[in-house]
Structures are given as structure tokens and as C-alpha cells.
Image 1 (cartoon, helix red, strand yellow):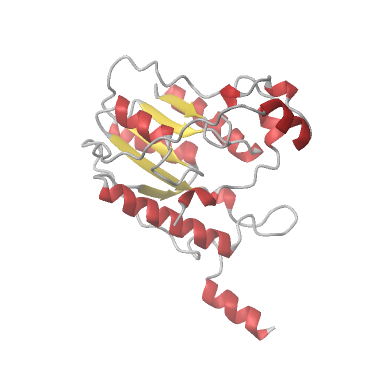
Image 2 (cartoon, helix red, strand yellow):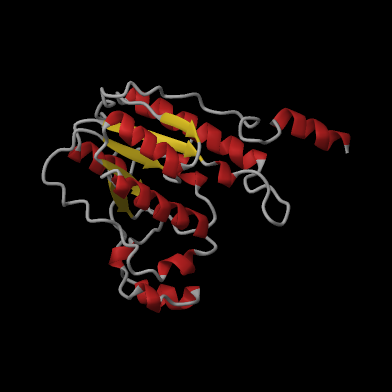
Length: 243
């Protein structure tokens, strides 16, 4: 399974792209190895071409991979539709399970929690003594808002947040124009990036640093659709067949 296919919609990408201060943190400023770091997986459910995981692995003595099922991503939208439908949620659950299996094969594991990341990440950072959280930036309104909340609460705990860019074919720092000058149509964008090279992908790690010894954190169970407040596919299919 290609876990990179679980990306969410970025319809409001332009809103966040105008924020010039939302560039990824410079990953080269770590003077010494950290005793423990957290890698917060979001829409990047893969170990290949994952700068967050590679950087945390290179800059830390131990790494705690984490995925949060944020309750705000589920339930009903203001228009009455599921924020995340059962079929999409099923694919996400399978992707998380596959990521956990891959990490286990590389000497690590994936900690899974249901909860708001700004709460879960602080609790885990306190438990394992993490000095930094590594994550990819996102572009949608809710995800950007979550990033702001997380940075604020982790700063109070003295935990650094290191963000990286991995959501687009062309890296944000390689664009030949300012984000505020982003063309409003594909033709204009294509003309400006013509000849621009795409960065080479990052090879997957053979082994991932072990989990932090402190805290004795339980990996946690991967939830079911029902746990996320959704109907099971069996009951949904039965309902559709009865119509």
C-alpha cells in the first residue's frame, strides 16, 4: 500500500501559503544529539522520502513515532456531512496499520492515540523527556491552526518544534518567486517553474533509532471506525443494499 495517498484536501492552500513565516525550520541547527525526539506523523504516512523521520533519526539518540486521530477530523461538518467518511477513514486506518508494521520491521514502533495533538504530544513529550517534535507542515486552515496551538504549548514545556516541507512536488524553498506572487492559474504557474528541478527523494532508513527508555509508553491500539464515531462498513453496506 502507498501510504502517501492518504493526503487530505488542500483547498485553502493559498490562504496559508501567503504566510511568509511558515517556512520549514532549518534542520541543520542541531549542535548535539538529542536524548529523545518525537516524530509526529500527519499526512505523511511513509518511511521513504520522509525528511522528518530521517532528520530526527540523525539528530537524536531515541525516536518516538506518533500518530494522532484528532476527534476534530471526524463527526459532522457545519453543512451536515461527515468530515471524514467511512471509506476514507478505512483507508487511513489501513495506512496507519501498515506504517506501524513497517516501523516495527525497522526496530521501532508507532504510538497511536485518539486525541487532540496539542494535548497528546505534550503528554508524550513529558513522559519520554523529548527535546523536540519533528513534523511536516500542512496547508489547510484547521491543520495550520493546530500547528499554532502545538507550537505555543510545547514552547511552554521547553520543547522545540521542527517543521519540514513535504506536501508538494516542488519544494517551497525552490520556487523562483515569492509565495505572495504565486500565479492564480496553472498556466502561469507552469511557465514560472519550467526548467525547475524536482528534489531527489530521500531513501528510507534501514533501521530507525529505538524508542525512548524513559516513560515506558504503550503503543496503543489502532481504533476502529466505531471508535472514531463512524458506522462500520458492514452496517453501511447493509443499509445501502436495503434502500
